[in-house]
Amino acid sequence: MNQIRNIIGIIILITILPLSSLAFNYVSKIDFNYNDINDELALCQLREYLLISYDIKVNHYSLDFIYKNKNFNLNLVNNKLLMQPGTQIILNDIDDVYFERKGEYIYVVYTKNNETYERIIASTKGIYLDEFSDCFIDNDVFDSDQE
Image 1 (tube, one colour):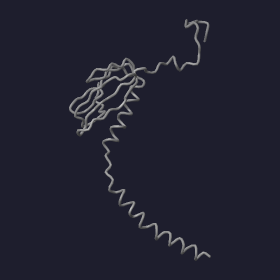
Image 2 (tube, rainbow, N blue to C red):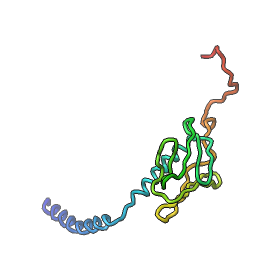
Image 3 (cartoon, helix red, strand yellow):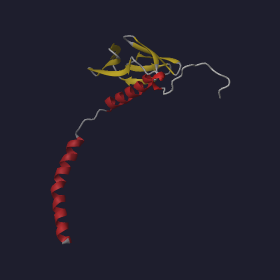
Image 4 (cartoon, rainbow, N blue to C red):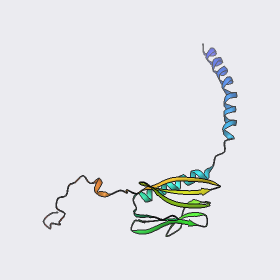
């Protein structure tokens, strides 16, 4: 009985082996562009910054906001979308970039290798800490008797 199982297993293996080699050959020829993945990761990180930022001001070629009590701006410098102060590169090797507000959302539109990309990076509504409070505070006056 074990010999029959072994023979059936070998037959199954022999029939699957050509299919798997064809699959590996096909998958190895797929062109994978890492720059697109890097751009999406950087835009996700930018969304995290803008999520907790406030006073977001949208100009056509720049975006100004306050993050951790510091003024930051995004603009195009030497074919890179930079977040300044400092030099944090958000998008690299881009030809043109501009920001626009559509409804409740802020979009970044950039051109790279003659292709135009449009991504949502922030909401104009913002997050307010009062929306997360479970406590109702009727009187917000400090009382020295309370500890």
